[in-house]
Image (cartoon, rainbow, N blue to C red; front, side, top):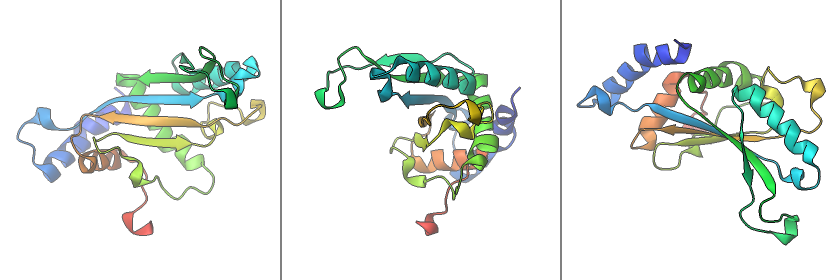
Length: 183
């Protein structure tokens, strides 16, 4: 069993039950999935950017990404309908907990000038989105091998009904949020 899955069963679920006093153990919010996405607009001019991003994302997530294509043509960006412009991976179960563990304990502490995650990243339905400016924060990526820095978006999808429940759950997992006073 992964460390964070065990942590959820031992302390996070009981902490949420204590704070929000749910009527049933099934009402306690859970982490459903983590979606990691990466926009690779440079791939329109040169396909090697897409290949490099594909390799990096596969190493970081442990799963092969889905290649996303443009839905519309946009002449200002020189993008045609059907061009490969992004990647995404949906992580569930053990891979999700392993990725979250590496994100919290290895990648986030390596971010330069990090002062905490923005608590305004909640969408109103209990899901949290954050961005990473560069993939080199993950220890699996060799910084000497990177040709271009590539950012990624990470979305935590939960079964929580409110943002407060999701915030408390992610905080109990160890997500380093900024305090509300610093904003």
